[in-house]
Length: 550
Ligand code: ADP
Image 1 (cartoon, protein in one colour):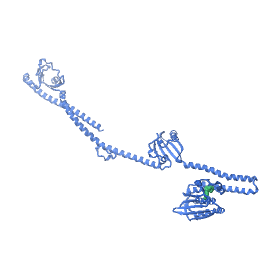
Image 2 (cartoon, helix red, strand yellow; image 1 turned 180 degrees about the vertical axis):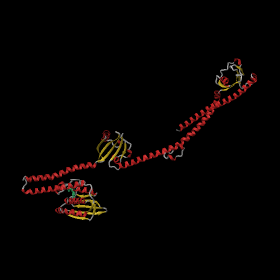
Image 3 (tube, helix red, strand yellow; image 1 turned 180 degrees about the horizontal axis):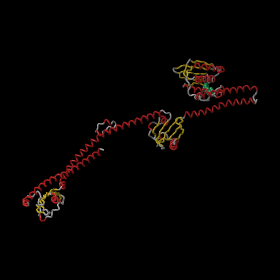
Image 4 (cartoon, protein in one colour; image 1 turned 30 degrees about the horizontal axis):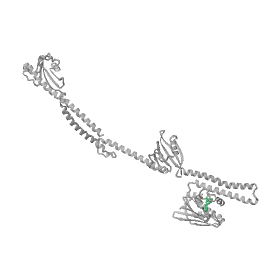
């Protein structure tokens, strides 16, 4: 830009310089010619007067070194000439100055020599007898003068060019330097020439607009990140060529990437054939989905094409953790299968016994035991169905109303209802529960205490004991049910809380167990956010500890 301005200024200076020189020369030439003509005219008039008065005698005595004098008769014949033999001279009536003098009394003309190097100025005056007196002077022509001054002109031009160059440099520097040193971040703080003010004001306005847009984009970006990073679902946005434009925290955790993957191809994160196929399908069909397992979690991946005016401009990938759903589905299926099995066994037994009785195939002495079996199985069925209903209610109920629960009261009523079974087994029950009130759900705390105490009696030895304690420990209430029973082998401890899991199925069934008691305990503890601990020694007994929040 500096060079362009410099060249432009220099060119303008040179053009002005040459133009001024030419115009000046033309004016000077015209000015000097006019002076010359003025002189010549006055000389001619003086000469004409003298010739009118004295005629040839004056001309003969006149020193004609500066001018050439020609006396021309009215018919154009040269009467006298200072420089040539008049008898050899042609008729002058066609000369412009003579024509003009003959017509108006005075005439002038200017003619160049053949070589163009000389020019002659003519002035003619008509005298009273009609003849014409003409004076002429020959001098160097404009061309010759111009050629003569060319060396001087060149010197002047060179000097002027040097001056122009210097001035052009100064001018371009004065224009450019403030532009180069402009602080475009704060345009209005620049101290520069006035003409730049409108430009600086516009830049300042644009800066403010750009800043505003950047702020808006940044705010939107922050909002977008805040929303997507707090999503449990993974979300990845890809451009049309598969470049990652945005990835949220869940997706990064899942695929083990970090923010550095933004701007890179999606295949740096995942290149499995199913994934590639899902992306292709989203591009062609608009949407695709598939399940995949990662780090023990089952995920559903949904890829949707992002369209603008019917054109695919990217892909949005959503990854939803479906582990719980899939597991719940599995558990539901397993539970249904187990329930059918658990229901069928006593029903088959009832059917078989009743058929034998109906067909009189049982000896009279055995009939009672058959009827007892039918009764026991029916009783077991009722217990089983009650437990299934309890568990389903726990599964279905989302919000249990929280209420003050007195643990001592609940333990008292549980032990009262279990008194009979404890007595049948000669098990001593020791109640060491403190008077503690926790905030919980009465029904759930009852289920927990009942099932633990029921097990402690059922899996006890004849004449054994069960001790129920509850103590306050800081903001917790620690309830423990210990027994002197058969204990639980270490390999079964982790599974006894599963639905229908039993260490010894026949023992469980013979004592009226359904395999659901501890599942109900576990579920109730989950709802109450209570912790379960188990200590057990085979042949010596078990201690179930529940830590409630008060
Ligand atoms: P069940 O109705 O069979 O008792 P539970 O879910 O209550 O079902 O218990 C699961 C299994 O855990 C029982 O079948 C039993 O084998 C074992 N168990 C539970 N409590 C005790 C205990 N106090 N002592 C020994 N084994 C126990």
